[in-house]
Length: 202
Image (cartoon, rainbow, N blue to C red; front, side, top):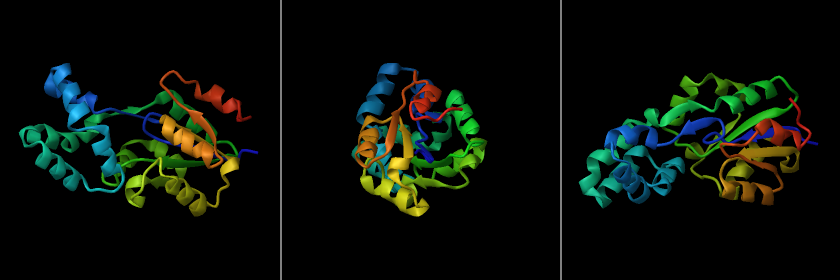
């Protein structure tokens, strides 16, 4: 019996992409893609999600690529522009779930320094009643199984009684290995239909 529904945020409830800022900044898609694929990579950003400070992450990259200092510093100076907004259809489902018997939780890879901005500007986070595990605070990120164990232990959950929703296939794989029911989200997913396969009807 499913009792808990656990949401990742980026790509599930929030639309975040550095291209929302850098497209106008570079005004050259080829140069933008070079920068994001080879310099300010997702792997680099994920280290901040794992607890490294924005200042340290920025300086490390500048030391590696001094010719790109201006563009690198622009990343976190303009981070809020990269957060385009909520994914409305999925947030609407979250709101409907908040009126049901299911317990709702968040498990997110997110920097502890940037996450407060999202909390302040998007009211739907209040639905979770602070039942959110943030990688930057814990200093460990998905797909390390330890972060799921933190969630389970902190809130006294049972994996097999929980549905985990994420857009990252590796995270889905690890969650499944830990005993969670899983839903892999993509931009075309019908979350309502996916939830109904587990008997969760809203």
